[in-house]
Image 1 (cartoon, rainbow over the protein chains, first blue to last red):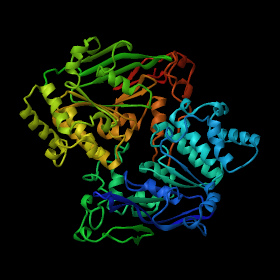
Image 2: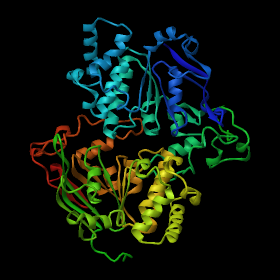
Image 3: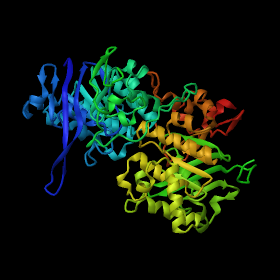
Length: 318
Length: 321
């Protein structure tokens, strides 16, 4: 794989209403998102809850069928493959979920959990698979006697390590990590993030890293995509966006993060209100009711994505 | 010097507190030796990893852990009253009135089958003994105070109709309805987005400043503690291992655990992890609790270090003997 590309990706969910349960409208969870991740890169996706981050991750893997748009794996269009053709690609892409408590089967032993993917794809003999499982446990830093134990015997951080071992068992090239550390403690989070970065170097992985923690995104990502109600607000190099955000929403997100540096005096932009209901987004720019620098035009016209200094921004200011 | 005539004494003083819980797997040493002081109007933070005893300390102050089967030693004095020796009936009088608490999950703190209004009015009538009409007016005023745009509509809303931030505002309104002297906030923003977290932080800060309300904020987010509190206590394995001014602790941590914890915060592209795990809560500890993971351990560390005082800071580590 050299790159993964999404073009005008859309996922709409119908909203039913009335006595005949007719379709009343649509929730546009992902609405025209285009992106490109090169081999070995990490794309960080940020935004508030309900902005479509997780849906985007799942649609790219075709765990959810998109309503429109295309996903390319190099020159292969993933979105056009039949399910049997897609299966060949399945082992090359994996996902790691937010909650390591609900993403591991409590009735399976850890060894079985990690081995399952290998079995399904008929890789190796049983003894080769056993050896592979032990090897994987060592890579993620778990003792080899974990094989016979059950998920409930492990702490949150250790469970996330099991999830990572399972995800890398099939030697994937692309991993979607959906808030993999948000349920973990600070010190454990640091351990897991280090593991992610080590594995990326060792195995040449490419990540789509979903998080709402901007400090974390700064540590791990090469580029950043800021989403709001299913649309791209700002997309470009991580350093540039985090050091010098252009979109008022990105600015507010960054300034909202509490700081440990006492010098960084509070010049906080506090957004009013919540994310609007995605079933009935505001007219014009989706962000205008909360935007500190809104103009007349923002109330009526949705701003197109524009190239500004090598990044993409959707805002009338530019 | 302050309106509530209790000037010299601390508002809250927790001394050598230990809490042992019983489970079917044996004793759990949830809190081993915690020392916390809060002055009138002061905001303190309690930091540390999951399972280090932050929440159990807070619940003990609220007397929300029933004495048997739990075993307490040490003391908790609030406004000069020995909280641990109170009878349950007496404890109920000050719990929620003198000390209130808000929790991590605002959704779970609210009863799903009653409206916000009725839950708020219930608390006001119980603690302030006001008639219904008057309680209703106080409720509306409180909701306005916590920054809810349309209070009269919110009074008739059920919890599921509100967003996370609105629910937390409603919970805060209930918590401050009885004019408490101390508000304990247990990870008040962990389940919220950063933008909403910023709103709730501003709200807590302004409530504390306007009403001279003391606060104990439990969090593992040092950024939040830095901006919200004046002093920080760091807990590890049931011990308070370090305390001092928030900015001092963050800029110049003394205890090796605090140092490691501060380095684990992702910043400017760097992140440091702490090797190893917390000691087992079921084990009796007779060494420094951080011994296993400490990069600066010495021979002395095989006994439990006492608390050493350096200027205005306290640290439980032999390096500062």
